[in-house]
Image (cartoon, rainbow, N blue to C red; front, side):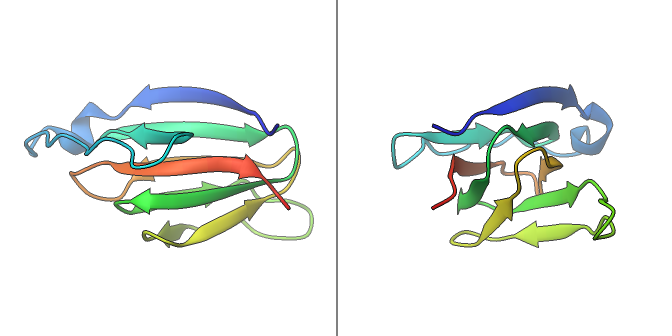
Length: 106
């Protein structure tokens, strides 16, 4: 089982001009939701895959000795492989939130 260490930070200033829209319930078990204006820091304890189910997410992985930090935007159906020990910061891209899964890498 893959687990992550999570830290939530409220980014109220980013969502203050938006009306909060409900994020639809997760379609599948094991899916998680991130609300509009919410940022989350995830650190993989083992190799993992982040898959976007609904909405879009903005991701910033930590820089490593091999790669620079680069912002990514993932849409539904897209995924990101996260190496063991790697940390990412994720935020819902728009005012609707997003649903995602975090699974062990195959």
